Length: 318
Image (cartoon, rainbow, N blue to C red; front, side):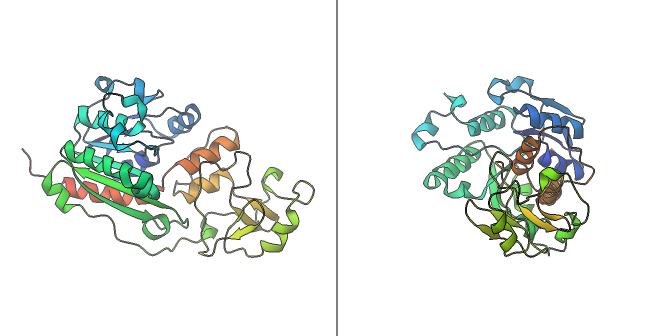
């Protein structure tokens, strides 16, 4: 069994995907206190709740696979040259510092699709250059949850996988597309009356007339976009975001037996491919929506983990 650790672990979606493929998660790090509560309710291994800037590499256990879904921040190429002298300046350099110091066999990075074009391509160039300098051969691919995870959400993310071993690198391939067979009805409860706070009504919603006029189908989801209703033409859930529930009306909307309502936090987690038994703590919904939006699509991660496992098994013992 190969050992793995997680950086910027959130609620542990990447770790869950790798656990399902038999990897042993030894350790993880997450700064956000509320996300850490959710993480610890669903995982047994050690989670260090601390700023990664303050975590010494010495205190991170040795591991075979490093997992990181890190935030995307701009840095100049000039800044990159100073990067390891001023590691606090950008979170990627914290990931790089751990890779440099621990030298895992495999690295998996997950980020937003726009990482490739971020800062005119400089950000992605720096990431690839850094991995190459540390001796990794790298493959990367943008994958959509509804095409690669059998999850009805339109969510594109980039996945970067680096291997120390040439054989493993050559053997590894990203998963092929798979048909989307999971319907919205597997996730959305159209029939049960939920708490009133999830519903939009004429009394508490000044733009209710717009919602009622435009939200007419049950086989897709909608969003309120400041002054108009957007229907998801793909008949899947639109991309869940970290700013859901933070004051705007950006949680996807659905027409049910009991009226127009927003998705519940539980439904949002299930649209990220988390299992129904994944426990959500008693936190404000705003925190849970943010955690769901910040997370990963677990089945996509699991498929990548499976292919990494196969590739690693090709490495000849020393």
